Image 1 (cartoon, rainbow, N blue to C red):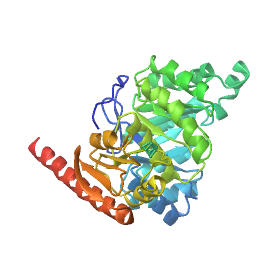
Image 2: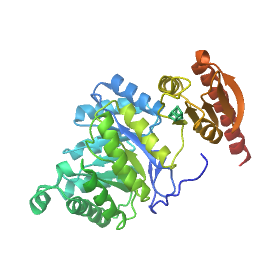
Image 3: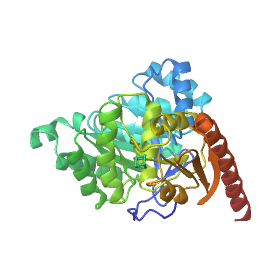
Length: 370
Ligand code: SF4
């Protein structure tokens, strides 16, 4: 990365979700949610581990029944990243998973029930030092608010949130974060903007039911991108009708694009055209697949010809500029090695891995010195 993100983040108080800080000056965390049957413990644990490998900081698990709460206990014992339990309708499930070591409770004010039930959840959360996410959702607003506003609106979402916030204030409970999700980009963005200036609790961002991998990624990137550019958001989840591992990857790509967090390789690649001296698209696809395990942050440029190749390659940690008869690899901004098309992907993979190792060592040295 060659310059810092210019985004000034909104000031928020910090809560702890397990060992992951959310809010304050903590990095914006990436969340996802399992879509396995929670009672299928083995499948759920495997999915959580896959999300963790992809970079999830926090994972949410739906707990729709007391049987699922028992499964949650077993899942909790087998994974080591913070788990949020998603609770709707039945507050007793929240009390149960709190016993079993949940790191955060997500409750939906539209369906969790009366104040006594909310108080029971808050008392238990306070007792066990567990934060809560108030998850307002346009699809499940309280009935009286649906009647008052006629349809979900940003104000309806904000009013629903404030009912809970005020009640949490009465109960003197501030260990919560808030989300105000709708599937409509405009409604979501306006609702978050409205509430962001009125409270200082951390905000969990998301466009709910955003769509499939492509459409949901675009919708989420626009909505969450606008909010993140405003400095709003302390943790996020990209909701996709797709493998949740993809949600994690898209979340990271968003944060990396805005230079809010770094992890893994930031590829700079040209779209290719008839000037290309090697197959850019095939090379990129293979490199992305082969190098998914790299966690250290680095820029790699893959550019098809000399029109933009040398310029981009010089700015990256490692850059390739297509050329004839050979392509030229730049390391740290300087021409380094010529590579042939026949061995291009293997050669690049090896050089990128060497560079990643070198960067990891440099980072470890810096940490040791500080
Ligand atoms: S860098 Fe070269 S190959 Fe790539 S799109 Fe531009 S002109 Fe085409």
